[in-house]
Amino acid sequence: MSRVRLFVLKNTMLFSNIVSNIIGVAIVIFLAQRSHSGASSEMIALGKRLNLFFIPSAFMLPFIIILLYERPIRHFLEIKHFEMPVSPKSYLKAKKRLLNEPFFVIAIDLGIWLLAAGIYPLAFWRFGADRATIKVPFFLSLYTGLITITVAFFLLERLLQKRLVPHLFPEGGLFMTPGTLRIRISTRLAALVFACNIIPFFTFFNTVNEAMDAHGDPAEALSFIRSTLSTNSILFMGVGIWLTILVSTNLRKPLEEIIRVLQGVRKGAFDNKVRVTSNDEIGYAGDVINEMTEGLKERDFIKETFGRYVTNEIRDVILSGKVPLDGETKEVTVLFADLRNFTPMVESIPPKEVVKIINSYFREMEAAINGNKGLVLQYIGDEIEAVFGAPLYYHDHPEMAVKAALEMIDRLRTVNRDLKARGFPLLSHGIGIHTGEVVAANIGSPSRLSYALVGDTVNLASRLQSLNKEFDTEIIISKATRERLDSGYPFKQLPPQRVKGKSHEVEIFTLPGRVRHAPRPF
Image (cartoon, rainbow, N blue to C red; front, side, top):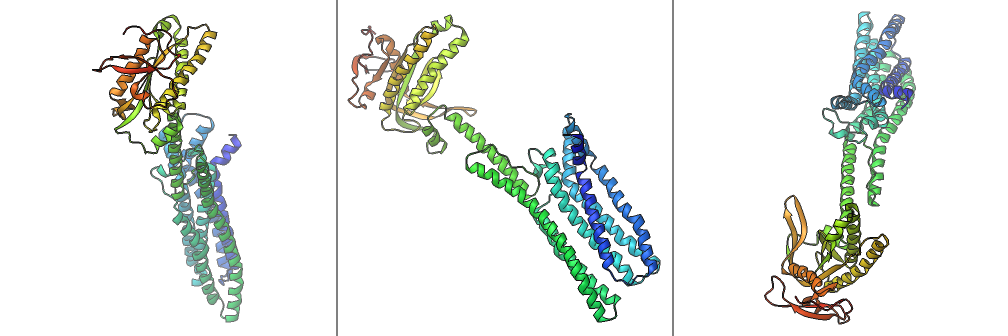
């Protein structure tokens, strides 16, 4: 920001108030010239002498008071220009002063014009003016003051929203600033009605009374009324049109901002922010929409992050609330996969390379599981636990688990080709699959939960995975899984085995061609 721009920014409100008062003085002069109060030359001369004193004072006094009022705002803008730190207390004070400034300035302006409405009639009265002559400066000052503060109010608000608010409220939040007056929509509309209807009405009413007092001849009075009302109507129409433009702009711009952001939200874009420039109902709506988009953005991030752990289809069903996560008994197929002889490899390879190797393995295995509508429940060291048929149920979950296991074997070959090219030992793993009932639920402490399976089915699947070491196989499935598969798989039955936790032997199967050696005694 250049020094010139900083100067203009700091004096925006001050200059706009001067412009508003110039408009007020111009209206006073115009209406005074149209007045036919019958004042004597001595009273006219007295009015001119008062103008020489009062009009400069009417500009200088508000100028000085507003400068003193704006000191926290100007100080903040100076600090921001030089990129220096500002204390929270000074920042809050500057924000309060800025939001209250339109009300403060119009109070000063109204006080000045009310003072004029008292000084001029009193001076005229002291010098012996008649009642009709005394009334003219009183009503001129009063009406012009009301018009001036209305113009100042809307002009100050417009410049405040457009120029200053973005610097002090870059993130919005005007509505939350304590100790401030709010420019409500109803206040704006009431001020507009007052300026464009009520003030002109009383001005015209006073013109009629003035004509009747100053002209004895009805024809002359009527001619004066017709001429004065015509010119005054044009004046007030011009002021009314300008005020309407200011008010409509002050309302239209924030609404356009809100519509722009909501259109982006409808298209799935949550990065846009409503530029909040007021502390009225529209500004509050803008802040709420910004909070909403932040929430939607966070939810979208969570959704995308969740999608890294499950398939998009499962993710969407879970987030929709259609899947109970507080505990249910259901039939699933559980898959365990474990790397063989990985511990000696860890001891001989640098840690960073170990992490890269196991991550590449997990990445490929998870792709195979997710691609077949499974869910990786957890990684336990170099072991994978996955489930098919939960939390989203599929009737052919055993088929999906076996397809995933075969794909995992193919993907392991891809991993090994890369390891061989880099000079690292090759990986091997065993996969165990079992189908049965489990309790599926969110399990854990209040601060940390995980979707987990509990039951004998999980334990047996883990035991089957371990049996691959005994038979030197890659895949072992239970009889329960085998019975739910199509006959197209050429599984080969292995000798029944007694496993921990079972009182009877378990029938197991593997795929032909995947038995590399004769089974060893158990």
